[in-house]
Length: 158
Length: 96
Image (tube, rainbow over all chains, first blue to last red; front, side, top):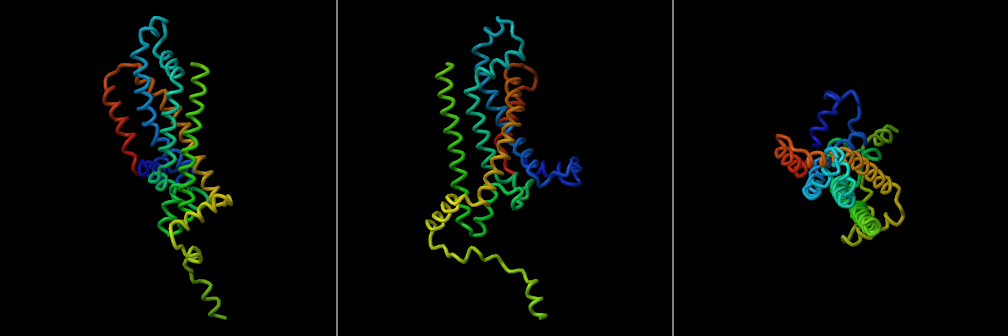
């Protein structure tokens, strides 16, 4: 993915005139391309299971397929939270593509994972370990927070 | 004089991390926690950028991926299975 985005955005590539290679925007694009298939594959599975169950009922209510898809997405929002978190975890812990399109430029496109990789190679273990710990904590905290919100909301709305 | 000018052009290797020799991984870990506790500006900047990039990517991917997944789920069309298999495979082969 990283290489493809790099080739697209590089100066001589098709989107080179945008001039966004080695910017945070390029990294957002790479990560988006990276996790969209994950989100669509997982959400398709969840929605397909619910569709099996509620197809007749939704049809009897005269829902179009588009409306049914929207209704199912909204009804399954608590299950989808888990999927979105899986996507976030994958995006936040990604190294390769972000390093290729971002360039790991200090203060501009240097993120946690690329810094950990670089500082470990340099032998600057304090920064690498500190960042590693922050990364783990953030992913853990976001997951825990979302899980609690999901529990609370489920108890409230059923 | 010449010598002073000349030496200023020599690129010195960055040996700042050697000034505090690390005797063990634990010492490094302790210093790492020190950086977190002191809210080291370099560290917080990196963390903030990480969160900004990843959260924007997740938002955009949600806007595209979730409706796409739902649309594939409720419709039946030729090539559906191929598309499903491709999307599952793509979510796995994300190395560079």
